[in-house]
Amino acid sequence: EKLALVEAHDLDAELSLMFALPHQSVASLQESVGWCRALLPTARLSAFPLMLLRGTLFHQRREALGLVEGFVSHPLVERIQRFIPHVVETPTMSRGDWSRMADIAAALEPQRSAP
Image (cartoon, rainbow, N blue to C red; front, side):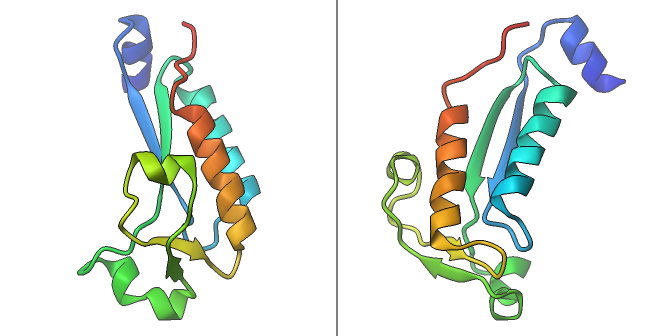
């Protein structure tokens, strides 16, 4: 109902996703992007990689969740947080999958859907 008001009044909106989450895959990220596009077609959509910031639940549970941090070279990371490690592997995501997810995220950045 609230999102219909955003659409009806042509308000600027942005939806942000995270990737490299526990249990996430390339396919599930693509599904999330599709869901967001269907939910609010005119919104700007962005996606950012998971970082394990101290004091967060993900940081505290990183070993139990199988989250592997590392530094990666990708244009998306170069624009955002180049000197902060990102989650680059999980039990459901390889480093190659991370790169594919980053490509999906980078492709979202400059886009805004037509009303």
